[in-house]
Length: 275
Image (tube, rainbow, N blue to C red; front, side):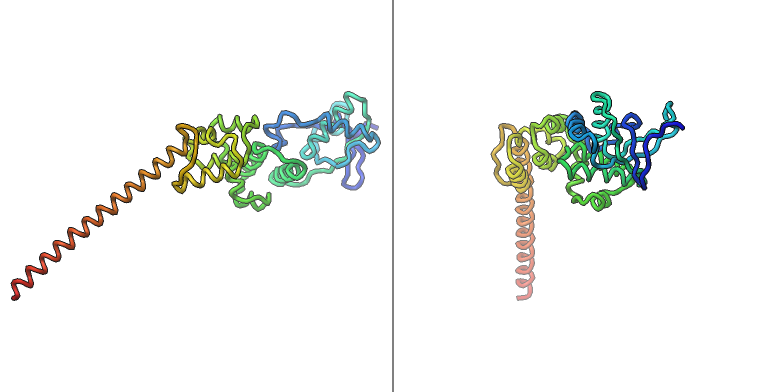
């Protein structure tokens, strides 16, 4: 009798680690992360070899089967657990089986599940969220629908999508941890061509300070910035627009006064002729 990938108990499968196929690109929520802490996951499995992987992963069956006649499964949920189990088997000859559930949802459900599961366990990066939101948008979901499915505000999702068009310097600073996501969200409120300068002005500030600077600058209030900062330029443009409005109002007032004087002169002439 040929060996099988695992034994089925109800809806639960028990699968040999070597029969799991892990495609890292499918783990959208970890996009941009170079360290998945696989060794840490392996050590947690080896700490209790009998129990091994505690939570079931999600899989889809792949056809055809492997050369040894055993079924192979593509991992769609629990990527780190699957990789940790494979490392335990390869490095330490762990002979346990990985609990798995046959995945029955569609691709949209899989992406949403991947995002929400990882975001609840640990804070994932903005680039991981962006990859999930982009994939959901590609699958036809609107921002409002993504918001409903992921329990996130539309503005929160919209800011992540803006990150796609951010200058490389902004993306790199965020990727390298030189600036927080909260501050970058404020940078993204500035005109796109000024975002790199805004980053220089706001780098090193707290989220509250960054929000305060952007809000005041947009209202035309005085803001301390580095020499030649984007907010100085923004204030200059706001002041120029205000001066234009003052000039327009003054001209309209002058035109009104001239019209009033002309009308008054005409009335006086009519009255003189009637006397």
